[in-house]
Image 1: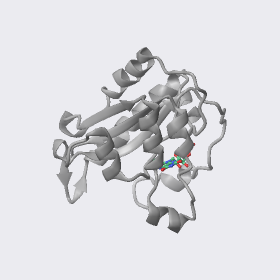
Image 2 (image 1 turned 180 degrees about the vertical axis):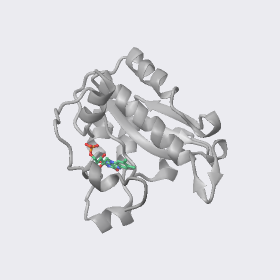
Image 3 (image 1 turned 120 degrees about the horizontal axis):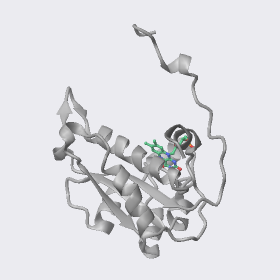
Image 4 (image 1 turned 45 degrees about the horizontal axis):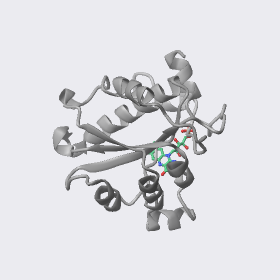
Length: 185
Ligand SMILES: Cc1cc2nc3c(=O)[nH]c(=O)nc-3n(C[C@H](O)[C@H](O)[C@H](O)COP(=O)(O)O)c2cc1C
C-alpha cells in the first residue's frame, strides 16, 4: 500500500476481530515508529504494549473523564469496547524532560503526535486498525502500568484486525479552507 493510500484509508477503528496480532507485525510497526522525527532527535517516546485482557479491561474502565463526558453528553468513551476487543493496546508515553519547551509550547506532545501517526499509518499499511484514544484517567493508567511519576501518558491506541470496513470517515475541511498562500487568510 503506498503512503497516500494508507493516509487516505486510515480510519478510527472501534470494532476488532479476536485475531491476535503477531509479534512480527508489532515489531514492524515499531520499526516505522522509531524513524519518526522528534525534538533534537531525542525520541522522548516510550510505549507499553498491553496484551493481557484483564489489564485491557482496566484500561477500558479508565477511558473516562467525568467532566469531559458530562459536557459532551457521552455515557462512555466511544472506544471503550475497542480497548477490550483489540488484542493489543499501545500506551503511548513520554517524559517531557526528553523534549523541548520553547515559547511555552511543550514539544513532547508534537513528538508524540508524529510518532503516533507513524504508528497508525504503518499499522494501516499492514492491514491493522487503530484508534487514538485521548480521554482516560491518566493517574490510574500510570499506576496500573507502573509508569513513573513525571512521565506523561499521551494516548491509548488499540491495535488489531478490524471488524469494520470504513471507506469514509467524518467529513474534512477542504484544502482551500486550511491552506493559505503567502499570507494568513
Ligand atoms: C488527540 C485525539 C484524541 C482522541 N480521543 C478519542 C477518544 O478518546 N475516543 C475515541 O473514540 N476517539 C478519539 N479520537 C479519534 C477521533 O475522534 C477521530 O480521529 C476523528 O473523529 C476523525 O475520524 P477518523 O480517525 O476515522 O478519520 C481522538 C483523536 C485524537 C487525534
